[in-house]
Image (cartoon, rainbow, N blue to C red; front, top):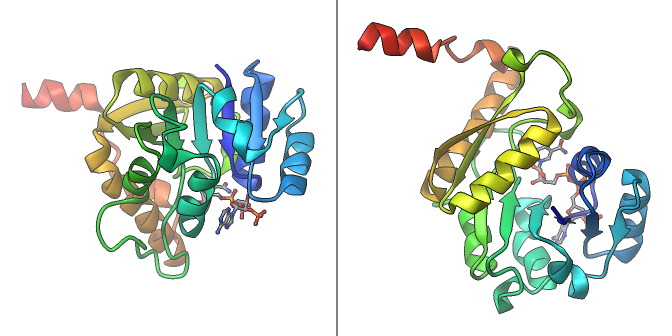
Length: 218
Ligand SMILES: NC(=O)c1ccc[n+]([C@@H]2O[C@H](COP(=O)([O-])OP(=O)(O)OC[C@H]3O[C@@H](n4cnc5c(N)ncnc54)[C@H](OP(=O)(O)O)[C@@H]3O)[C@@H](O)[C@H]2O)c1
């Protein structure tokens, strides 16, 4: 898969390193060409820094690694509103959350839905926002691998997202359509609130065995 990363910061580099090492040709772009050069250098594996204008044509899958405040600017730079990303899978990793309070920044809807409105015709999947980039690659036992919840409307885009999650070492769980993405983004705010209260969010949700639950409820 030709993976294009829109963004040149920490998440771009940490995810990019794992996917490039897994053999995916990787391009990286952003609003600052020097930062794109540096990010590609840190990713290694022949990752290519590209100018925003040439970015969309190179990518089968675009990974958005921008802050909420930069989504419209960043997507416009690569031609999103003109349809340059139409038909492509676009993974939105944004945490549109006030880190101090855990409050979601969009008053309604979600960052992923803003991405879908701004990248005309793109097949958007909400993915990978909950885990720090440094969580990857996960190389431990499969039954304790991180579960990455995905929301999206296009089966092919969800398949691309699931494949990229597997390459990170995670397990993909499709939990709904893009209209469920606000709930996934709220989950990040919940995690931040639990951390701010001094607890590990791993212990703030119930331990539920789906098979046992199915057996118990018939
Ligand atoms: N870091 C993680 O582990 C992690 C994990 C999950 C989700 N996320 C989410 O991923 C996104 C990126 O996080 P990050 O840690 O990679 O952030 P970061 O290191 O601060 O990088 C942000 C990137 O966005 C660009 N940017 C910032 N403001 C912009 C604007 N107004 N217009 C266009 N581009 C802009 C920056 O460009 P410049 O260099 O030119 O400023 C940089 O390329 C965030 O939404 C974050 O919540 C991060």
